Amino acid sequence: MNADERADELCELSLSQAGEWIRQRKLSPVELTQAHLERIQRVDPRINSYITVTAEAALQQARLAEVELQRGETRAGGPLGPLHGLPLALKDLYETQGIRTTVGTKHYSDYIPTEDAVVVGRLKAAGAILLGKNNMHEIALGLTTVNPHFGTCRNPWALERIVGGSSGGSAAALAARLCLGALGSDTGGSIRVPAALCGVVGLKPTYGRVSLRGVIPLSWNLDHAGPMARQVQDVALLLQVIAGYDPLDAYSIDIPVDDYSSDIHRGVRGWRIALAEDDYFNRTQPEVLETVRLAAQTFEALGAQVEGTPFPDTYQAALANGMMVIGDAAVFHAPRLLENPGDFGADVLQRLQNGAALPVKEYIQARRTQTLLRSQFARFFESYDLLLMPTTPVAAPPIEGPSAVELARLLTRYTAPFNLTGFPALSLPCGFTSDGLPIGLQIIGPHWGEAKLLRGGYAYERATDWPNRKLAV
Image 1 (cartoon, rainbow, N blue to C red):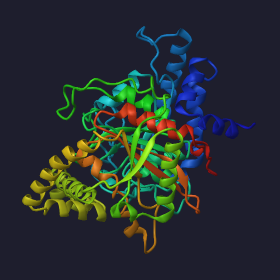
Image 2 (image 1 turned 45 degrees about the vertical axis):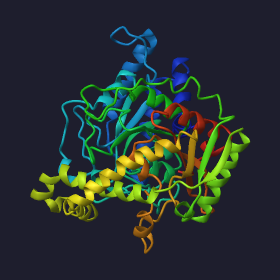
Image 3 (image 1 turned 180 degrees about the vertical axis):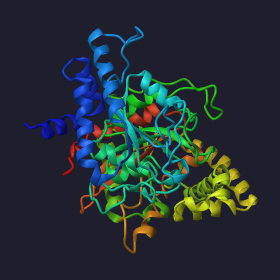
Image 4 (image 1 turned 90 degrees about the vertical axis):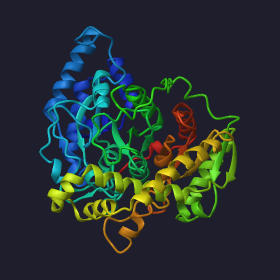
């Protein structure tokens, strides 16, 4: 086995597997980090999933992790963390001390924060190693990660296809085995859409579950920070580290954090699960729709009672979310929009201008819709444990061509309603199209129901072989 083959073998490990090997002294944090850095150097020029790679700092962190591993405790004398020696990546809107944080835009291209975002600090305290900052759609306001400033990010399953957005680089890096886990953000689907298009797992937690302090905002009212990985168990591990109340974050909510892994293996037997079925959801690419229905049958085989049911007012929720996103973004970016509008890419500039021109009465109506539908959706979950639907109505659209823009506009059709209402939602692979493109299943649960959501996703994942499908790159 040559060096590249050894690196590729290590990069195929899941986050949980790698962590177990490190704890058992079967794997060195330095070797694991070097393997990922070597693969990034070899593969990422074709993918463009990173804006910044922190190779020197990552190796320094890995060497320290190795010393601590040999001592059996951290430098401060505490126990080793659950992410000890594991290389991760961050969407480039998480503030990182001493490392530039571009938000995918020219406006922030030289911004170097003096402090870490709260969740970045929690990852470091748990022993994680930072490989770098991932490419993203400019200011998180878009779904393609075709970035005019830092280059287009390409889908590892088909390089002529988009990765989704706005956390596109994080999903692509995971799919291409260029990190073991990542953090994204989700305002209308920006974790779940790229997870679906790239065949990985992404979780948007309940609104207020994960601190947003130090995450550069798109919408104060709709932003969610969340984990991404290649397996559900790995997402649970990451969420355990980053979840929890932050008293200095006005949007954080003080609700106890569950143990997300203790019951993850217990299955879904006896659960009542809804499959969204009405005209709104039937406007889905036939292959995607059929694959999601087959996933529902898997839940039935696992002992759950699955019922096809309408899920009303989803269109109204998606519409209201879209209005609020551009309105909030236009306010946050107002100084840049006023002083240097030409430094934004054309698509983002148009959306910001639309947000700035949004009538106040329409924004107020969107906020009322948010309040009403949050209550309505909560009543739905009084009758069901989980809700199933496609993550996206189509598989990954082409980067270029006559259908590219039209198809990209559809991508948040099924994700945005749960940003508006704040319910936790998980996307995980459930199959592939005849062209070999990944298809995502979205599972939604009640507020603060992440443990149940992850348990359901894990049960489905264990009953399939989708996580083991390998890329050619």
